[in-house]
Image (cartoon, rainbow, N blue to C red; front, side, top):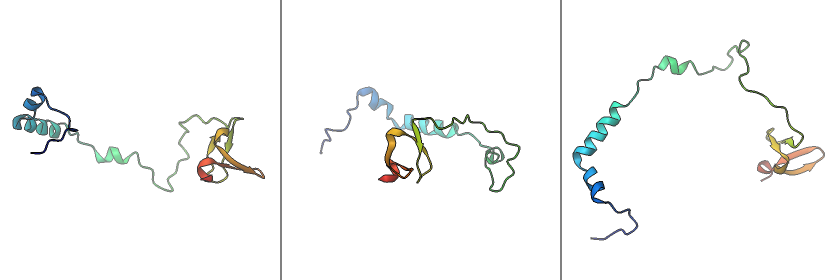
Length: 99
């Protein structure tokens, strides 16, 4: 019989845990821990296209672009100046878009 020397070695404690009864009890415990999810509560979090969001308030704090940041003209994301790959005629491109 071939021996896999890279496989982790099992101690006597590990061997006793792998008994059939132990494995069966683990399987029963996993199925008992499942949680029933109410589909209506889960569906309330979805937004439909064209929904009226006029009554919604912004829940994130928006920070204006800082002096050491730029907006990429290809992906329109704000990056730090260290991510600037090229600049020509006011067109700033980040490293990800230039790659």
